[in-house]
Amino acid sequence: MKYLEESTETPLGEILAIMQGRIVNSTTYFGIPALKNPCDFWVYQELIYSCKPTLIIEIGNNSGGSTLALAHLQDLLGEGRIIGIDIDHSRIHQLVKDHARITLIEADACRALEQVRSLVRTDDRILIIEDSSHTYENTLNVLVAYAPLLKSGEYFIVEDSICRHGLDLGPDPGPYEAIEEFVRSRQDFEIDRSKESFVITWNPKGFLVKK
Image 1: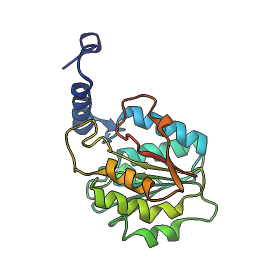
Image 2: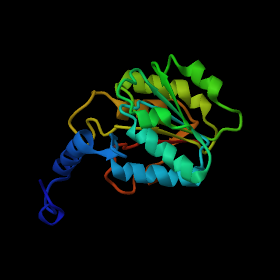
Image 3: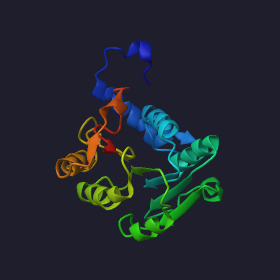
Protein backbone atom coordinates (compact mmCIF):
# COMPACT_ATOMS: atom_id res chain seq x y z
CA MET A 1 0.00 0.00 0.00
CA LYS A 2 1.26 3.47 -0.89
CA TYR A 3 0.75 6.69 1.04
CA LEU A 4 0.68 10.20 -0.43
CA GLU A 5 3.78 11.55 1.30
CA GLU A 6 5.75 8.59 -0.02
CA SER A 7 4.37 8.77 -3.55
CA THR A 8 5.05 12.24 -4.93
CA GLU A 9 7.61 10.82 -7.37
CA THR A 10 5.50 7.80 -8.35
CA PRO A 11 4.59 7.78 -12.08
CA LEU A 12 0.94 8.68 -12.74
CA GLY A 13 0.38 5.38 -14.55
CA GLU A 14 1.25 3.47 -11.39
CA ILE A 15 -1.10 5.64 -9.32
CA LEU A 16 -3.93 5.05 -11.81
CA ALA A 17 -3.40 1.29 -11.56
CA ILE A 18 -3.58 1.48 -7.75
CA MET A 19 -6.78 3.51 -7.95
CA GLN A 20 -8.27 1.05 -10.44
CA GLY A 21 -7.61 -1.82 -8.03
CA ARG A 22 -9.33 0.08 -5.21
CA ILE A 23 -12.32 1.00 -7.39
CA VAL A 24 -12.85 -2.50 -8.74
CA ASN A 25 -12.16 -4.47 -5.57
CA SER A 26 -13.45 -2.47 -2.62
CA THR A 27 -15.25 0.77 -3.49
CA THR A 28 -18.81 0.83 -2.16
CA TYR A 29 -21.76 3.17 -1.70
CA PHE A 30 -24.01 2.35 1.26
CA GLY A 31 -22.23 -1.02 1.32
CA ILE A 32 -23.01 -1.75 -2.35
CA PRO A 33 -20.16 -2.11 -4.88
CA ALA A 34 -19.86 1.14 -6.87
CA LEU A 35 -17.33 0.99 -9.69
CA LYS A 36 -16.75 4.74 -9.96
CA ASN A 37 -13.74 7.01 -9.65
CA PRO A 38 -14.78 9.32 -6.77
CA CYS A 39 -13.27 12.36 -8.55
CA ASP A 40 -15.65 11.76 -11.43
CA PHE A 41 -18.63 11.17 -9.19
CA TRP A 42 -17.98 14.48 -7.44
CA VAL A 43 -18.21 16.13 -10.87
CA TYR A 44 -21.44 14.20 -11.48
CA GLN A 45 -23.05 15.72 -8.39
CA GLU A 46 -21.92 19.21 -9.45
CA LEU A 47 -23.42 18.64 -12.89
CA ILE A 48 -26.64 17.22 -11.45
CA TYR A 49 -27.02 20.18 -9.09
CA SER A 50 -26.43 22.71 -11.86
CA CYS A 51 -28.50 21.01 -14.59
CA LYS A 52 -31.10 19.36 -12.32
CA PRO A 53 -32.00 16.47 -14.64
CA THR A 54 -35.44 15.03 -13.98
CA LEU A 55 -34.42 11.77 -15.66
CA ILE A 56 -31.04 10.05 -15.43
CA ILE A 57 -30.51 7.08 -17.73
CA GLU A 58 -27.67 4.91 -16.44
CA ILE A 59 -26.61 2.24 -18.93
CA GLY A 60 -24.63 -0.46 -17.11
CA ASN A 61 -25.46 -0.88 -13.43
CA ASN A 62 -23.43 -3.82 -12.06
CA SER A 63 -24.51 -4.10 -8.39
CA GLY A 64 -26.29 -0.77 -8.40
CA GLY A 65 -24.13 1.27 -6.02
CA SER A 66 -23.84 4.24 -8.36
CA THR A 67 -27.52 3.90 -9.31
CA LEU A 68 -28.47 4.31 -5.66
CA ALA A 69 -26.06 7.23 -5.25
CA LEU A 70 -27.69 9.02 -8.18
CA ALA A 71 -31.14 8.40 -6.71
CA HIS A 72 -30.00 9.81 -3.36
CA LEU A 73 -28.82 12.98 -5.10
CA GLN A 74 -32.28 13.27 -6.63
CA ASP A 75 -33.78 12.75 -3.18
CA LEU A 76 -31.84 15.79 -1.99
CA LEU A 77 -33.07 17.83 -4.97
CA GLY A 78 -36.63 16.65 -4.34
CA GLU A 79 -37.31 15.47 -7.88
CA GLY A 80 -36.17 13.06 -10.57
CA ARG A 81 -36.19 9.48 -11.75
CA ILE A 82 -33.52 6.92 -12.68
CA ILE A 83 -33.75 4.34 -15.44
CA GLY A 84 -31.09 1.67 -14.94
CA ILE A 85 -30.40 -0.57 -17.94
CA ASP A 86 -28.22 -3.69 -17.96
CA ILE A 87 -28.25 -7.05 -19.68
CA ASP A 88 -27.93 -8.73 -16.23
CA HIS A 89 -29.46 -7.37 -13.03
CA SER A 90 -28.84 -10.49 -10.96
CA ARG A 91 -26.28 -8.65 -8.79
CA ILE A 92 -28.49 -5.62 -8.08
CA HIS A 93 -28.85 -4.99 -4.34
CA GLN A 94 -32.33 -4.98 -2.79
CA LEU A 95 -31.87 -1.38 -1.61
CA VAL A 96 -31.62 -0.37 -5.26
CA LYS A 97 -34.65 -2.40 -6.30
CA ASP A 98 -36.71 -0.86 -3.48
CA HIS A 99 -35.91 2.78 -4.18
CA ALA A 100 -39.00 4.55 -5.50
CA ARG A 101 -37.12 6.69 -8.02
CA ILE A 102 -35.39 3.76 -9.75
CA THR A 103 -36.82 1.76 -12.66
CA LEU A 104 -34.69 -1.19 -13.78
CA ILE A 105 -34.73 -2.59 -17.32
CA GLU A 106 -32.89 -5.85 -17.89
CA ALA A 107 -32.01 -5.76 -21.58
CA ASP A 108 -29.46 -4.67 -24.13
CA ALA A 109 -29.57 -0.87 -24.13
CA CYS A 110 -30.09 -0.44 -27.87
CA ARG A 111 -32.84 -3.04 -27.94
CA ALA A 112 -34.51 -1.36 -24.96
CA LEU A 113 -34.58 2.07 -26.61
CA GLU A 114 -38.29 2.10 -27.41
CA GLN A 115 -39.14 0.99 -23.87
CA VAL A 116 -36.99 3.82 -22.55
CA ARG A 117 -38.62 6.30 -24.94
CA SER A 118 -42.02 5.34 -23.53
CA LEU A 119 -40.83 6.41 -20.07
CA VAL A 120 -39.50 9.80 -21.18
CA ARG A 121 -41.75 12.80 -20.60
CA THR A 122 -41.73 15.71 -23.03
CA ASP A 123 -40.58 18.14 -20.32
CA ASP A 124 -37.84 15.88 -18.91
CA ARG A 125 -34.33 17.25 -18.47
CA ILE A 126 -32.11 14.24 -19.19
CA LEU A 127 -28.64 13.05 -18.24
CA ILE A 128 -27.30 9.84 -19.82
CA ILE A 129 -24.41 7.83 -18.38
CA GLU A 130 -23.04 5.04 -20.61
CA ASP A 131 -21.10 2.42 -18.60
CA SER A 132 -21.80 -0.91 -20.30
CA SER A 133 -19.46 -3.22 -22.22
CA HIS A 134 -16.91 -0.53 -23.29
CA THR A 135 -16.38 -2.05 -26.72
CA TYR A 136 -15.97 0.43 -29.57
CA GLU A 137 -18.99 -0.88 -31.46
CA ASN A 138 -21.37 -0.97 -28.50
CA THR A 139 -20.31 2.43 -27.18
CA LEU A 140 -20.79 4.05 -30.59
CA ASN A 141 -24.13 2.28 -31.08
CA VAL A 142 -25.39 3.52 -27.69
CA LEU A 143 -24.24 7.06 -28.43
CA VAL A 144 -26.01 7.11 -31.78
CA ALA A 145 -29.18 5.47 -30.43
CA TYR A 146 -29.63 7.58 -27.30
CA ALA A 147 -28.32 10.97 -28.47
CA PRO A 148 -31.72 12.02 -29.93
CA LEU A 149 -33.25 11.90 -26.44
CA LEU A 150 -31.15 14.89 -25.35
CA LYS A 151 -31.92 18.57 -25.76
CA SER A 152 -29.47 21.47 -25.96
CA GLY A 153 -27.31 21.81 -22.84
CA GLU A 154 -27.88 18.22 -21.68
CA TYR A 155 -25.00 15.81 -21.06
CA PHE A 156 -24.08 12.35 -22.31
CA ILE A 157 -21.30 10.91 -20.13
CA VAL A 158 -19.29 8.02 -21.58
CA GLU A 159 -17.38 6.16 -18.88
CA ASP A 160 -14.10 4.25 -18.95
CA SER A 161 -12.57 5.97 -21.95
CA ILE A 162 -9.45 5.58 -19.80
CA CYS A 163 -9.16 2.11 -21.40
CA ARG A 164 -5.85 2.19 -23.35
CA HIS A 165 -5.65 5.93 -22.57
CA GLY A 166 -4.32 5.87 -19.02
CA LEU A 167 -4.87 2.23 -18.08
CA ASP A 168 -3.50 -0.65 -20.12
CA LEU A 169 -6.70 -2.67 -20.05
CA GLY A 170 -10.05 -2.93 -21.78
CA PRO A 171 -11.03 -3.08 -25.45
CA ASP A 172 -8.77 -1.56 -28.10
CA PRO A 173 -10.32 0.36 -29.78
CA GLY A 174 -12.77 1.22 -27.04
CA PRO A 175 -14.88 4.08 -25.66
CA TYR A 176 -12.25 6.77 -26.32
CA GLU A 177 -12.18 6.00 -30.03
CA ALA A 178 -15.98 5.69 -30.14
CA ILE A 179 -16.31 9.16 -28.61
CA GLU A 180 -13.92 10.63 -31.17
CA GLU A 181 -15.78 9.00 -34.05
CA PHE A 182 -19.17 10.10 -32.72
CA VAL A 183 -18.10 13.74 -32.30
CA ARG A 184 -16.25 13.75 -35.64
CA SER A 185 -19.30 12.49 -37.51
CA ARG A 186 -21.80 15.07 -36.28
CA GLN A 187 -22.03 18.72 -35.32
CA ASP A 188 -24.59 18.65 -32.49
CA PHE A 189 -22.30 17.46 -29.66
CA GLU A 190 -19.06 18.76 -28.24
CA ILE A 191 -16.61 17.46 -25.63
CA ASP A 192 -16.64 19.48 -22.40
CA ARG A 193 -13.14 19.00 -21.03
CA SER A 194 -13.80 21.46 -18.19
CA LYS A 195 -15.40 18.49 -16.42
CA GLU A 196 -11.93 16.85 -16.26
CA SER A 197 -10.45 19.54 -13.99
CA PHE A 198 -9.35 17.04 -11.33
CA VAL A 199 -7.00 15.75 -14.10
CA ILE A 200 -7.45 12.18 -12.86
CA THR A 201 -10.61 10.97 -14.58
CA TRP A 202 -11.81 7.61 -15.83
CA ASN A 203 -13.68 9.45 -18.59
CA PRO A 204 -11.15 11.38 -20.74
CA LYS A 205 -13.11 13.15 -23.50
CA GLY A 206 -16.18 11.45 -22.02
CA PHE A 207 -18.27 14.44 -20.96
CA LEU A 208 -20.32 15.28 -24.05
CA VAL A 209 -22.81 18.14 -24.13
CA LYS A 210 -25.44 18.67 -26.77
CA LYS A 211 -25.16 22.06 -28.48
